[in-house]
Amino acid sequence: MFAVYATHAAPDDPLSSLTVGEMPEPNVPTGSVRVKVTHASLNRHDLFTLQGISGHPEGINFPLILGNDAAGTLDDGTPVVIYPMMGSDDWRGDETMDPAWHIPSEFIHGTFADYVVVPQRNVIPLPSGLSPLHASVLGTAWLTAYRALFTKAQLRPGETVLIQGASGGMSTALIQLGRAAGLEVWATSRHEEGRAIAKRVGAHECFLPNEPLPRKAPAVIDSVGSTTFAHSLSSLARGGTLVVTGGTSGFDVSLNILPIIADQLTITGSIMGTLADMTNMMDLIVNAGITPEIGTVLPMERADEAFRAMWEGTTRGKMVFTR
Image: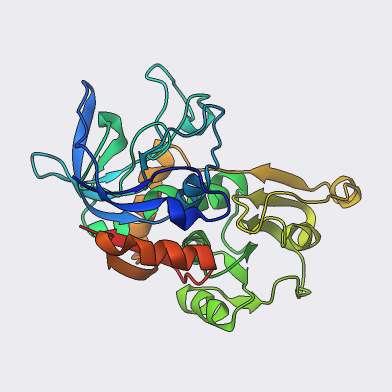
């Protein structure tokens, strides 16, 4: 079958590992289903895989089909969206806390292919009012954004949130979800185009990275990491919460703990979300009439163009592949 996959770990030149070609069709074990992929979205995780970066001690077995998110159809024609958090069969409770959790393109082949096989519980019927194109971006970036805003930061209508790095896929999700939930949304971007996108999708105010703000915010969501972490911390109001969801500029930071103590700040990580988060988020999207921002749509055969744009830092919004 057609597939987009990684052949080896290439830390300094990840595009050298990217291959567009053929892979064997997957077997369907008991308890799993086969999804014919119609739409799949690109995530920073896919670049990390090409670089050989894994959040699991087991590492990565190559060759590995890339892709974490997708929408498509079951063999009987039912339209579905994939909930990407997989784990132990006997785990009960918050799926993100399962020690064995993983997503497509980690321990199993991913979604950038004609077919992907996932456990039965990981397919959700596509809600009425949500297209497969827009559903395909929800599983990683949007799910992480939803949990960061409402589970981790516990923001309520009228409160202010600062979102670092406004033009990426997760950031536009944060802006759209936050605006729909009645938050005052601030965003940063080093590019004028990025700030324009943030304003267009719902940000109330936009700033340059590290620019002083009109006032401190009760919550900051930071997916950028090294280059914005100090600004994120200094932007928090007393008792505020910094939610770290990624590190696109790097994961190493220096930290002055005095303001954390004096202002009683909370720093927490957030990754993905529960199955309940996923269904609640889709309900919010449909009921609020949100159209997830998508920057680029390409046939999967042209995946290399999207990967290059992400590697070079020229992406604006989510990128989706079609089959």
